[in-house]
Image 1 (tube, rainbow, N blue to C red):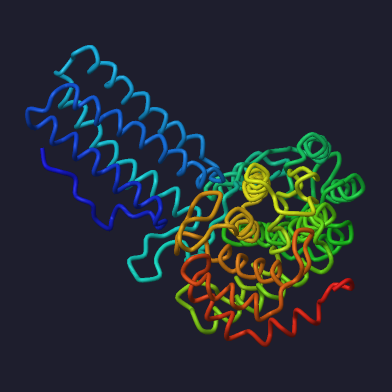
Image 2 (cartoon, rainbow, N blue to C red):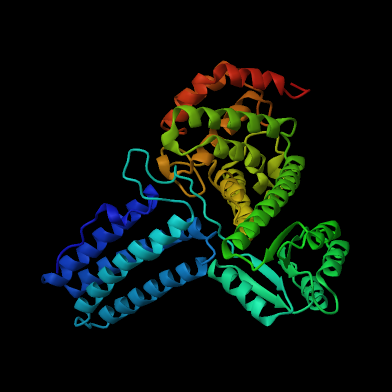
Length: 482
């Protein structure tokens, strides 16, 4: 059987995962050599066991990156199925069954090709990673795709109209809940807190659309986006519905594209409102528990904004537009939210942490990432995607020696690389419970020494270009006790 040849089509856009896939290919090639020649059953079992061990370590790393995908459990199940199958082959070889060698190799080659080329590539692409063959490849690209299928309530007494609206929405992955009148819709909303968008006719027997809108506004504990449907040119009905509290309107007959655009407009409004409240509340929660409060959050917001804007102007290949730079800055206060899960004994310790204490402290990146990923799954918000990246990975290092995932180079999301530099600079130049504030020159020296080790070299160049801006911001937003 021919050996497996690696080619660019197998790349998923994250250097670390691509290297692990290459290693899996090489282990399978060892098995192909063993089964094609006169290799002993013991040697075959040894190579197969090495493959299983490496695959399980790879799966753990891959699953850590993919766990915010809505079909994560499906991917995890595919990994488990593979491990179970290989474990079965190992047991068979231990019992002396050599006839399974061709079946084993065929399974491995087929599974790896299909899994990497299909499931792996699709999952990583849906999370915004693309296999770019240019110098700046991989996770610098930040095209966002909504991850959550919104549940929408359609209220219409006509079964034909409900079917029409449901068909349009379900083609776009929306989940539709139906109600035939206002009273039924009101009850559904009381029992379904996950519903945030409602499309309702205004003319219905019993509780009509106007009454429904007023009732929903009276009882709502979360904001609902309500679109009313009226007959063509019934302007009085539209005005009455808007006065009752509706957000938008559609005219019958409903055009599919118009309906979808109205829905997406509502989603955008809901996401912005939810995110702003969430970011403010969560950032303050983290801020209150951390000993280095002051204006730390305000400073890193400004440092990340200036850095991101500079990248947008001078390093367009990194994929940081002005809009993305603004979003990175906006969610940057969440970077240490995971410290809410760290003991005060460690957070407020007035000296250097022991090795064991530092290992516990390192968990804050993963805790914060997990927390935001849970919310991201429910909203699909691009802003929370960025928040996840910079929270989970802002302690990764360019040379791969950081944590929690040991990512390196462009495998580290660009938002996390920006956050890392801003956070380190602020930590160096402000007083902490374990150290005095360093001068700007000392901090600059440390950052320069971290070029291509801790930091993206382009970001170090950006820092030097923005040096005067950083100094001005540091003085402008200095803590009172400084």
